[in-house]
Image 1 (cartoon, one colour):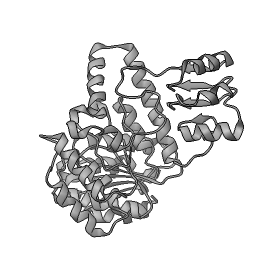
Image 2 (spheres, one colour; image 1 turned 60 degrees about the horizontal axis):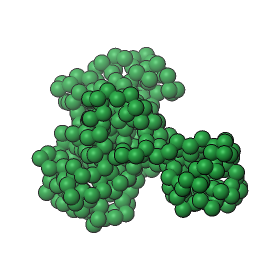
Image 3 (cartoon, rainbow, N blue to C red; image 1 turned 90 degrees about the horizontal axis):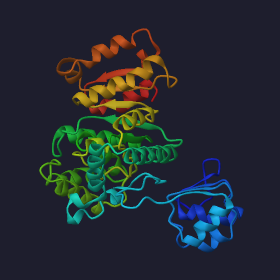
Image 4 (spheres, rainbow, N blue to C red; image 1 turned 180 degrees about the vertical axis):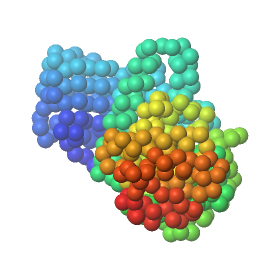
Length: 370
């Protein structure tokens, strides 16, 4: 992110570059919100700048700076020690951040440690931990809104069981690639399987078509995240190292399903503790439509989570819904007939489609107004 003054009505500062630019341009931090910025080396600036009415959320700073801004009338929420995550974070996660120390085993990574903390505090029923999770998730939502502002987002939903090396996985990856090349931002649930494949396709979009075929060969060394998440993730990072300038996409996973790691191909990862917040947020932000690949209970739930606001038009005009694999959605899990019945004689009727093949999805989205 380039250095610039704070955004969000010029009141939020989320990086050191924004802090410096704002102090330089305005000479005042009065009324600003400074979020998870390490200000340890900005004591001189804090001592010489008006901070009346400012709020500092989880910003490390020296004692003399904290004392001064407290006298100014600023409100300071200090960093919370001992956590494997920052509840006040101003940006979504990156794969490198969540998988730091992967070489020492997945269990040592920030992602795994956050899940372990979640499991422990959830079992304890600790209200303080519940508050920290809620603050974290709201901070992630705010960061995700800023990241996706102005983007045409297509959600790609599908099961976690889809394995690398299968034709289904390859098809989902090609879909992510084509959607990205068409100017959409691909958003997935951020996990393994179909979700990873779609994020991989988006990552491959800037490269020639052969790159994706070569990446499949690298990934085939670890077809699934069991028995070893470490090996599964390491294969993905090998792809990222060989082709370092991948396309942008978003993954929105959850520690609620902590046995499923996030996939490393999403350039931006908005990870939540609360699964309900994550599910609704993913679908609500898919403003250009949602594609549903074959899946099981979770994907069926997502279909009707998305159908409900389209039915009632509670988010405005219905957004496109494309279900892929006629046999799956009419015979194995006959979701399509019910969706058709719900949509009949309503605005959403012209915004749903069932296609046989992944290759038909881009044209279906275009036809439905995505």
